[in-house]
Image (cartoon, rainbow, N blue to C red):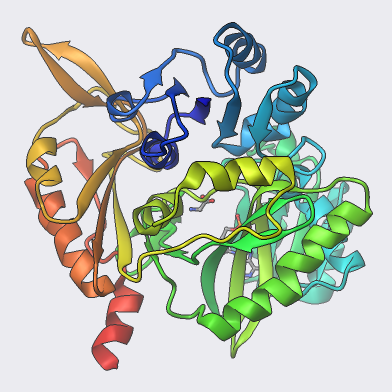
Length: 431
Ligand code: AMP
Ligand code: GLY
């Protein structure tokens, strides 16, 4: 099978790393890829948002199967267009991708099908939005309706902060058109977890759960990022919790989408808040998490490719996936300046040394290869740059290996958090 992966982040490196090991994969391409992906796939210089370019490449190269990593091309209809051209693809249609593309769509669907989530209101007018906030009081959460690269959520401790958030989104257009409509919702307390299932329109196959660290600073402080690290399994999602999440959240969503004429295929990623054993949906994403995917791929024992093909074919009914019992952790190394303006072009050394640490794989995100002093060098080319991924019998063991590898990387232009996995490690110490 000739396979194309769309995207160029750490998630796509992990997907290419898994897919390249499949005996069913005869040729693997990645658009646009990065310096690390080039080791396992042929990178082609087509942006993940260039829908026409991706279609043309898939036709010219006789691609059999396309795996779409990021949300933007899904929301823009890449899978619909590939399907129209007779090319099989893993990922939702544009209509089904509205689960991530419009928070209002997602909240209304959950409400119609009695799926647990925070109470909310949808607003297109500033005055009505502010009046709703004054009525409900704080703390309260203000969200831009559309895609805002993970930044369109403002957690407000006071009514004044929430009113200011409305002005930032709706009047100042801080998130562009994404903020033309806002969702205002209940501030939920509890512990967060990322839950993943692959879905074929009708059946859902749970994957391992994970937890990520969104804040840029140690102790979960500072501005939110796309994710500074993650680990799997998530101790809070035991077998009973997984069963409950499938029964109360994932399966009713899959059935609801099908009943409403937009069956969901692809990865359904539920961002959950779990409080006193009760899971509620914070958000849905329609793709693998980044960096959660890197931890999941490190733990996956089965061949990934047939599972993704079965999802695209509507054949997940009797499918099963096997996982290593070991824990996996990902420590993200980001370029100085991230999540603001990251410094580009700084040279990264020591990657070979890092990869020699037992049970460690270094996934690349924003990297590229450049000639420096007559030699080929890996340089930073984005915000999140590396995902140092390690496995171990426990999160604590995986954590020690990941930081040993981090310490082997010589990159003054970057930084990482030193406390990834702290919550799981503290649980392990206490037990
Ligand atoms: P989202 O992009 O919707 O996942 O929001 C980003 C982050 O904001 C989440 O991971 C949570 O940490 C936080 N968040 C979102 N919605 C809520 C909520 N209703 N209550 C508390 N925290 C929230
Ligand atoms: N790490 C969270 C996300 O991919 O949205």
